[in-house]
Length: 105
Image 1 (cartoon, one colour):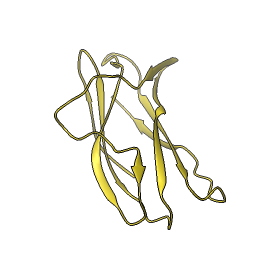
Image 2: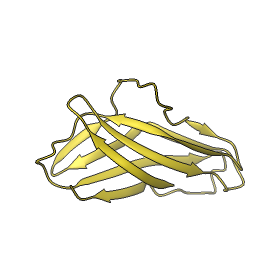
Image 3: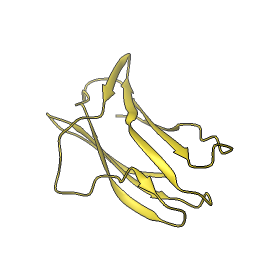
Image 4: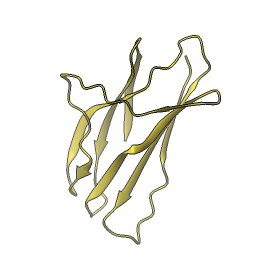
């Protein structure tokens, strides 16, 4: 998983990602468990939709995708962002740690 960019706007914070699934199994991207932490404030996924592609929640082995996740708006004057994304596999023997990205503003 690669973080491409983060855009902060009045109504949302958009996180652009590239993902590839080479785990040998299907994986699930739990966007509803993903969040951004700014200082001590948790920013959850927002319901705002955009014309751009949002990340699919299911990925079969060998697939790739690029897209965005939308979160509640961050403060441009606030501290750095910690973006946390939760992923799991159909194979319960594989334990994914949450993917985290630290972004300095």
